[in-house]
Every structure is written in structure tokens, then in C-alpha cells.
Length: 271
Image 1 (cartoon, rainbow, N blue to C red):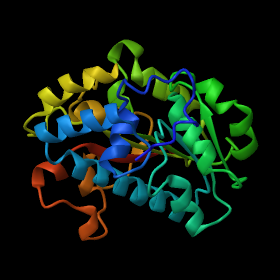
Image 2: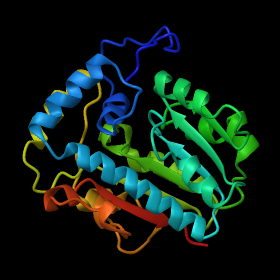
Image 3: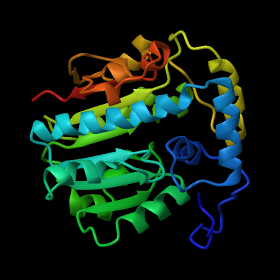
Image 4: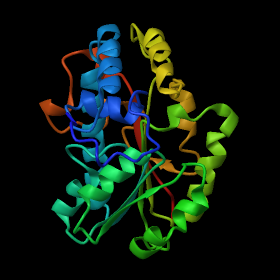
């Protein structure tokens, strides 16, 4: 866990927990503070399987990225990328093809600061601080323009992000702005907390999360599926995170309840 705070941007209040840093704690990462660990433990007591769910979401990232590389995609945009931790997107895709390019985006300054440190010396990756809603600012950022060719297919990731987007922001309109800008053949990967999974403690965990100043909004299967409007959903569709094309025992949990959430899916923009 982090002990040297010299890298922390001055505007960051390390006494206020942050979802990205809590997630990092659940993944046994090093980039979290006491407030994040305290909240992480509080939620673990409410939902003991949440650490497994975080791990399974990370495994979904890997499988979705492999699917996209196998389909010929060599450039990626990860929005809401969070704190860099084990199994980052660029590590996965560049292991398969070192020419792959990745742009990470997060509105959390700590996440971006860590990503920039991690990416030093890797001229095929960049990290920018921006808000999901600012699609044109993200897609037209100098770092994005330098690394990504929007006339060619990209892999767009929004994992455990959209459940922090309230309906008042019109998430469908936000997604439409990205869909309109990316090339045919591009992929969209989403994971999202499930409202209709049989998961005990979810309401209590959401209440605890309010201390992060980010209120999760679980959505039903049909609501998550609707985020893929304009994309052809890849088999097996929108399913429990662990159920999306598992490749081994490490991609599954021993708890069927955990395997059912969060929802995850991949869509392809038709040619």
C-alpha cells in the first residue's frame, strides 16, 4: 500500500475514499489510502464476494481485449480506466502485438498521475484527465490524435463506469457521441453493476459507497443491453461478468451469485 504521498496531486483529499482506489485495494494494489481501505473493508463485510467480483471484472477486461486483438484491432481507448494495477490493458495487448496503442482516460487526478508514471518510456501509450461526457475533447485531445486513428477500428472500454452515470446525464446520448465518431468495425466493452441479480447486501453497499461522493446506479439486464444500441452484440451477449467467454477456472468464481454480476458485454459497430 502507498506510503510515499509525494506524487499525490495537491488538490486530492486523501481522507475521502474514491471508487477507483477502493477497487485497487480489492485487487491487492498499492495505490490506495487508509480511507479507501476502510471503505473497502466495510463493503467486504456487507458483500464478502465483492473482491472476487473485482477480480472477475479484471479477467473480463483481458478476455475482451484478446477478442478485439484477434479481430484485428490494434488501438484502444480505456475510459474510466482507474488506478493502474495488475493486468493493465496495454500490458495485455502489447504482449500480443507490441505495436498496439492505448490511451487511458480518467477524471480522477490520482489515477492519471499513476498512469503517467506507469507509462514512462512507453511511447505507444498515453493517459489524459477528462470527463466521460466530453467525448469530443477526449477524441480530439493531442495524445489521442497522436496515437489513435479514428478512421480505423478501435477498442473502446467503459468498465465499471456507466453505473456512476445518472440518467440525468443521458448515458445513451453520451454513448451515441462516441459511436458516431469511431470507425465501423470498432468494439465497445461495458461492465456494469446489476440491479436484478440476486445479490444480498447490494443496497447496503451502495449506501456505504455514498461516502465516496459517487453514487452507484445499478441497472437491469435490459437497461445495460440498451447501452449497445447501434452495435452488434458479440456472443454470448450481455451476461454475468464471469460468463463472458470464460477461458479457464481462473475466470470463474466458486460462488454462482458472484458469477452473475456485474453484467458484461462486447459490441461491434457494423460495417
